[in-house]
Length: 322
Image (cartoon, rainbow, N blue to C red; front, side, top):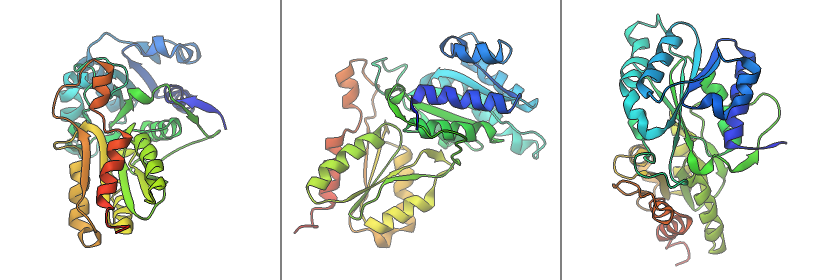
């Protein structure tokens, strides 16, 4: 099984889908420069750089999708999706419904998000909850190269617009990626570690922090289960509820601002549908309600780390050995 970085897994998915379907095109901020192998294989008509103008890029993607193409638009840093909100939210997300299904909008908006490069607050702002709250859009955030490849291929084939967020801190982390066709359905979570005492529910880079926390907890006799959401909309409610009912204790972890984040929706889901299975209150760990510093150590301090996750889980499990 070959080893790829998440960045290279995205490139592999793009290449495979462009070979499979001549309607798949890729354009955006620097995409032809950083993925020159795609230009070599598919030509400058199908892979091209654009000006730094997110609204124009997203608007072009919407029009191309309505015209029968399957565009993948690289918008670079997630905070600058602010400039593309009308095109993505008000057009791509709504026009299929408003047209009575006469048009479909099979586009993917790629953007990098999260801590890891010390790029400062205007480039590091986790905005996934904005798009989860926007009708008609799907939202994906993988934590491994294999998931990035399988989910991106599924997103490109989807007839709905997909906001596909790449965690900056994971871009060049290597991982095994299976050979051959790899499709991961949107809306299907992955239980990366099975356990019986506490559920750690996460996505993006904090999945890896949960794995480190689980190792620490195991030394204390606490068996943690880890659920990687992978897709934030559609959300795999069945997997979340099954884990919560199994362990009775839940810690929800994400890097984005804790207030009104994806974790709040998950906590509400569990409270509404699995309350009788809970043995302790639900805990949420997230980033602060503050701009992210450019300093690397301070940036990392805004992200829930393994020690904090393990501490929260221990607090929920304090009666296990009493």
